[in-house]
Every structure is written in structure tokens, then in C-alpha cells.
Amino acid sequence: MGTFGGHLWINAERQGRIRPGRGPYFTRRVYPSRAPRRRRDLLADGTPRRKVDSWERLASGIVLPPAPRGASSLPPGHRLGPGGWSAEDPGRLAWDILTRLRAHWLSTPDSVGAGWCAIAAHGMPYWADSEPVLLLSERRRRNRTGAGTATHRQLADGTRTVAIDPLFPSLEVVDAGTAVAQCVATIRAGKKTWWVPEVPGLDDREVRAIQFIDAAYQCTHLDTDSIRSRARNIVDRRTLDGLLGLCDLGAQSPMETITRLVLRDELPAGHSWTSQVTISLDNGTVRRQSAPGDNVTTPDLACTSLRVAVYYDGNHHSSEEQKLRDFRLYQRLKSLGWEAVRIDKELLRDRREMLEQVGYAIQVARRNAT
Figure: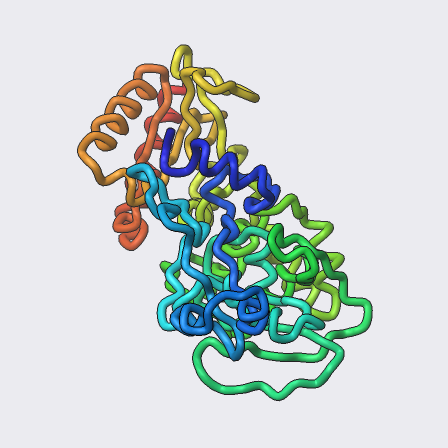
């Protein structure tokens, strides 16, 4: 039972709190089970006024009841509680974006979630929690200033919407393809930023957009055609085609995307990188599929023709126990005729050193192939 798995995650998926997607659990957000309520509804149900007024206030007339007693007592190592799970701290906004979306929707139930709150509703675990809630409606509403307030805009005719929140079945958001297009538009306009390392041949906005689309592929079942069809009149077609051409259905983290982009031109002619290749640790062959318990490894990138494997090591690889496992894996791959390179965030910052290490592995692999 790992951090991303076990009965808590399985139950959350059964409850509809984890949206369907092609990626593993750690690529998909978990909806909170702790839900906001209208203050007037709680008072009408007989909840004491003093008790209601002691709870967290999310918006005018909306409060967040505390989690049930004992609900936050989780097994060691788990990241899943009543607040759900995402990969970002909301910072000054205090609550995750889905909790804020639910709260603002309770105040304006004729509204539709869009942009970053919509893509979070479709399962995106990154980048959204630091953004304000965007609501679309046929009514014109004045936008209030201040942290945690919602932004209101006009709902365009023909906007496709879906209702997917398991606890708020009437809450609608724009469909996944539209949400992706809206978020890409904010990234391309420079309105949404986050740190990215330098990538040759691409500017920072392009890199962020590619990271974002890669992550959207993991938390949904969108493909290039569905994104293109929803992006009309939102993102320029030529710009979008250029981005989609550099995206990958298999990148399971934003830093894996960076690794692929930096290394995309490092292989000799006639060879290519493939993401999430499964390699047998019994004989070194490439497997099309595997079952739990199989003796296999899945590098983030692999050149199967040269037998070069590249891994991006996140924070969980820093423990001594994990380092020992990684070393043994490296040695095993080498004994099976594979050259393995491990890359972490620090090595990504030192691009020259990173390219030297990968280049050396490719050189050795080419010698071994002759």
C-alpha cells in the first residue's frame, strides 16, 4: 500500500471523487469529501447559530463545516483526507480551487465553472489551486476585488458543459476540451506562469503550455482531435498545432515533460524517444503490457533501438533506501545491455552536464549495438 493507492484511493474512485483518466493516481486530483454549505440551510436544519458561526467562512453566506471526528487520522504515508488531494498549495487563497468553486456556485447556482477551476474539476492536480474561480453565466455580475473572490464573465452561446461533481450533481463546468483551451490561452498570454528551466528552441510560455497539455492527457481521456475541436476561437490553430506536435500522451509529471523536451534532439538520426516503456528485468526485453508483481521497470523515456533508458527522479528518490533501490536497478539494466541515466531537478538546471551524461550513454549504447 503506497502513498498513492490503497483502500482510501480505491474508495475515492468508486465515489466518483477521482475522475477517469489515462494516468495513474498521482496524475489525477481527488475531490474533497468535505463540502461547503449555505449558512441559511444549516440554520433551517436546526444547527445552532453559534456553532455555524464558528466554522470557516468561504464566501458571503457560505461556511465550511469541519471534517467528521477522526476523519483526518490517516495511516502513515497517505496524502488523502477529507480535503482530497492535489499537487499544489493554494497559498493566500487558503482553500483548494474545488472547495472555492463549490462555495461560489452555492451563491450563484446559475453559473458554470470555467478555466482553471473547470480543468481542476476534470482532474488536473497542478497549477489550478493558486488561481481564482472563474464563473460564466447569462446574467451580468459585478466582479468584486479581494483574495478568494470569484471572477464573473458572460456565458457564450453554445458552450458545452458537464456536471461531474459527485457531491454537487447540479454544478456544471465547461467540458474538458474547452477547459484545456481556455487555460492554454491564459498561459500563452502570460497571465499564468510558473517556474520552468530553459529549453532550447522554446520560450517559457510554450514550455508551460506543453507541460499543461501533457498533464491534461494524463488526468483525462482527451486526444489531439478533441482539444483542437474545442479550441476554435480560443487558441490560434497554428499555435495550437505547434504545441500539440510537441506533446506526449505518456508524460506522467511536468518534469518528465521538461526532460523529454530538453532531450528531444539528442538522438542520432533514425532513432527516437518513447515514453513509459516497460522493460523486463528478467531478460531486458521490451514488454507491451505487464501485470502487478511482474519483474519490470518503466523508465520515463527510452530509446528502444539503442537500449537507452532515462528516468526523472522526483523528491521521493532522495531517501537512502530509495537511492539503494535505484542503484541496484541501474546495475541490473546495465547487466541486461541497457544504458540508464537518472535525472533530477538539479541536473535539469545544469543542462550542459545533463546533456553530457545522456550523450555519453547514447555513445556507449551505439558502440554496444555494433
